[in-house]
Image (cartoon, rainbow, N blue to C red; front, top):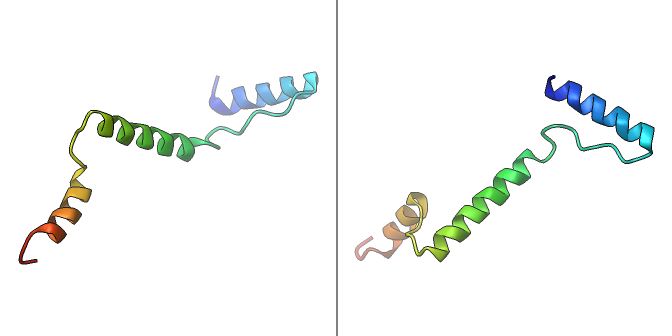
Length: 67
């Protein structure tokens, strides 16, 4: 069964039971990605790991004397 078929079946069942329709597939994908990224960064802070490369490169270029 494909994702679309499962979604249509869930929507039909929800309608038959008078419940709200489920969210469409992929509706919250970016939200999940952002939450996962934030959680990963939070865990890095707790583990006292260094900043990621982009942040280090940005800060390193501005904090070095003579630049």
